[in-house]
Image 1 (tube, rainbow, N blue to C red):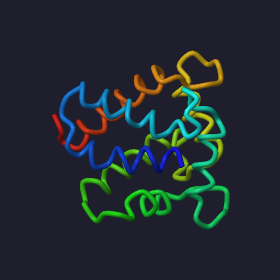
Image 2 (spheres, rainbow, N blue to C red):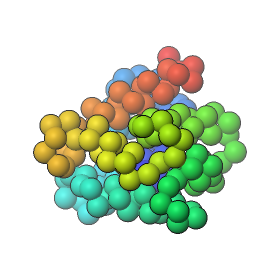
Image 3 (cartoon, rainbow, N blue to C red):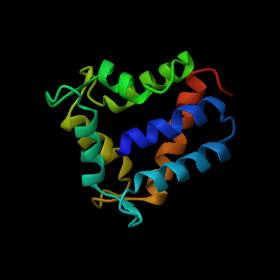
Image 4 (cartoon, rainbow, N blue to C red):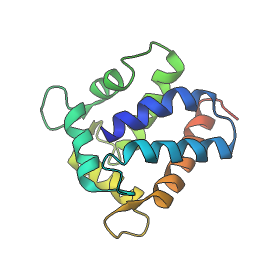
Length: 142
């Protein structure tokens, strides 16, 4: 449920956030929601569980349609749909227009700044603060 939690929390707040401190606070909240077992780290099983939850047709890949439908099923707000598409583009690390295990491996590597196999809160907040700020600027938020 990692990415679902991230997107469900991030989308509405991202549409409103405007300062670096707000992105930092949002990233901290995302970490708390994403640390499913509350052990203070995000580990690979927490990432992998999300993949399986979003693969609606169980083909081992998440299409843009599956991702956007899954993450925006609670809204028809075009800004939030655009932000979901931007997140999909960021997750699609290899640019093949599908999210698969390889993309989740790459994404986890990006999160794990010191490459020790786990993502600490500091690593997570640093990565997401920058990413959320970039996406907000991409969608006209200053």
